[in-house]
Image 1 (cartoon, protein in one colour):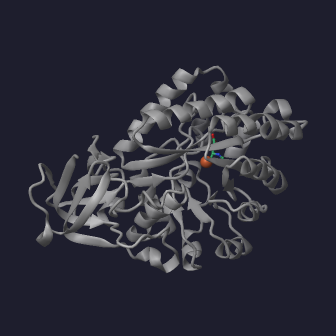
Image 2 (tube, rainbow, N blue to C red; image 1 turned 30 degrees about the vertical axis):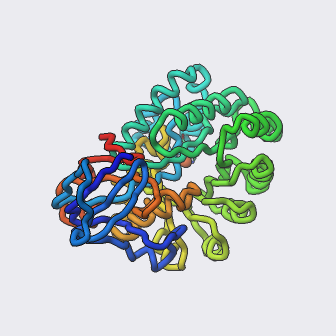
Image 3 (tube, helix red, strand yellow; image 1 turned 135 degrees about the vertical axis):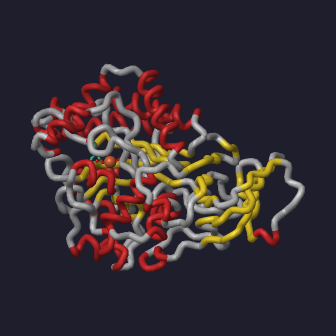
Length: 412
Ligand code: NIG
Ligand code: FE
């Protein structure tokens, strides 16, 4: 059995002694920590932790973390990191005054990514996504959800999902796959969108089920994309194949996507930049995790989700990166935390809760990830010498991470 002891930790963050699934509303302001602490890892799991007075002895491998903090790895519950090419030309278009919607209308956006993916091999997609996984690992992510959605054809979507399956098999990160065949209406089906929806339901979902290619099903429920009724229909087909919904809603308009998600027992509803009061009231009555993506608002210069209103209404909130080539070309979770503090007015304690245990909930991983708890996966990171928890989101743009531990092993 391999054992690793981290000792003299200035502050051990997000410790958990009785299991919890998520942190809700006003509870989000409380972040359980131990000052002057140790944590013991056995194989790939946390085996114990406590104050230095009771530090175990006789462990061969010891890391001294004097003046350093230890956090559980981030759980990034919303990404699109399998894609064929970057889209900086749209970034320049936006600088010159076009909006995200205008760029999409002229053939840019998701359809542009789909065109590029068509002619890219599984090997190349894997290779590029692998590099992105490596990058997010170094910035503290230990579990990640990855969506399809740039295939938009039977072959394209299955190709993406097979790449994600291979990433799952080869990577030491914990990965969940989300089938997003309904990310946009392909140009070819513009006049007969129902035909494409039937392809999703009759051609894609059965193969996904038989090959075990996805854990979740997603739809971009939005004006000019999929209606709530179409969303409902696609989600139900996914549910029948064993996929739980986790969906894109309320990015630009509030059209009933949240209600479609709640009705279908979604694990999370994501984006939420535009929220009506009834959306909030409906969420309060549900178990659905509201997931916010501040880097997307930052990059597209669109409104920020009303995080304070959600939390102050008693809702939980999770934070994710949305790493994708169009709206968020970054998977840097420490930057997500800084943006959430600055623009959502979330406290440092709230952003840590939102990106660890609540992110785990949004991936169905609360029992194994998202906190430092005995028996949970030893996915954590040791900071450089920093002064406090708040220093992490405060010092935006700096790399404060010294060591990353995944499955109990020091990986960088
Ligand atoms: O979450 N909103 C829909 N999908 C992505 C953006 C996809 C793209 O522009 O390529 C998002 O922001
Ligand atoms: Fe997204």
